[in-house]
Image 1 (cartoon, helix red, strand yellow):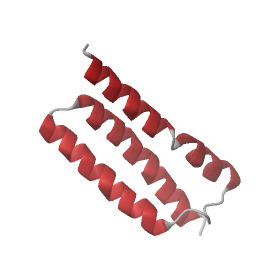
Image 2 (cartoon, helix red, strand yellow):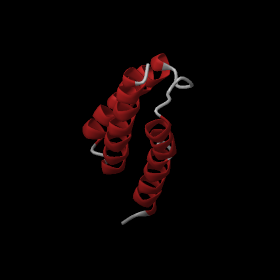
Image 3 (cartoon, one colour):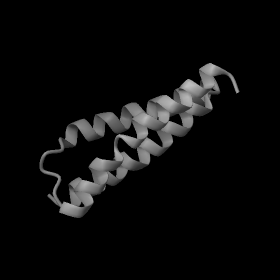
Length: 84
């Protein structure tokens, strides 16, 4: 595996993992008041577009990181709407 691919996987893992504490906190506290609905929706759209870009570019690190991030954002969106 080449260095560029390794860096891509590490970057994707770190940016994806960064959402886990927010998901856990929102889930445990049943509180999402501090999360902007507009930001979550726009970020979800951006991540979906990055996933499409990754597919078209054939970049597995981009695809993997953004698919997982998209799922985490969907969880946050669900919690945001549930705990209104």
